[in-house]
Each structure stands twice: as structure tokens, then as C-alpha cells.
Length: 124
Image (cartoon, rainbow, N blue to C red; front, side):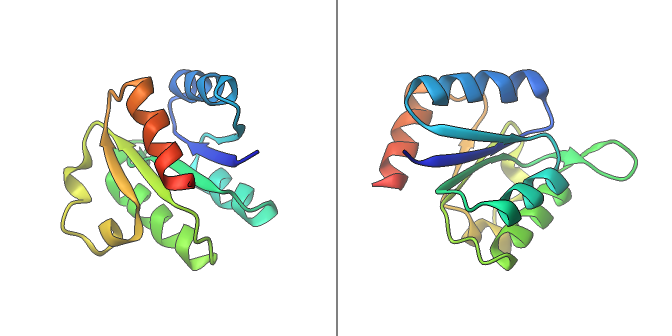
């Protein structure tokens, strides 16, 4: 069974994705912050990471730079798992070096079918 780590600062969306992926047969771990995401990866490797791009910055405001730093940190940890970025505002990632570190970018809202097909393609 593939282990998927899902990171998003929206607890409702995080719970919905967790339930959907578990029903599809995946083992799912969740993280509400960039720091939790790093800790989860340090404790156990993931086969795939799904993450939002915007996490709260030190002022508590959603900030794409926090997600870009998380992408770099994931790779700095030696994690070679595919990374899917789910974002309603991915423009800050396009053309940046971090874009080359992710497997794909999906625009929110993403259909369950599209997400599951993307995961299946990346894990096979």
C-alpha cells in the first residue's frame, strides 16, 4: 500500500482528501503546517506528497513563498517522492526553480477523478 503525505493549512480540505484517498486504498498521513510536513517526512518516507502552495507566513497570512520553501526543504531532506502541488493560486510557482522540483501542479478545485488518475500515474 502506497503512503501519501497530504499537507494543507485548511483542515476541512485536508480531512476530505484523507478520506477520499483512504477509500481509494492509500495509507494517508496529514500535516497542517510546513513544519509538520517536514517532521512527518523525517519520521517516515512517503511514496507521494500532495501539498498546498500557500501556507501561513509569520504574520499568519497565506504566502506562496512558504510553500516554495517547503518544496525545497522536502528535496533537501533527500525525499525523491513525486510531489503534487494543489493550489488555487499557482502563479507564484510558475517559472521558478521550485517548479522543476515538483511532478505536477493541479489547479484547485480539482476533481476526485483527476486527482486519483494523477496519483495512479505518478505511482506506477
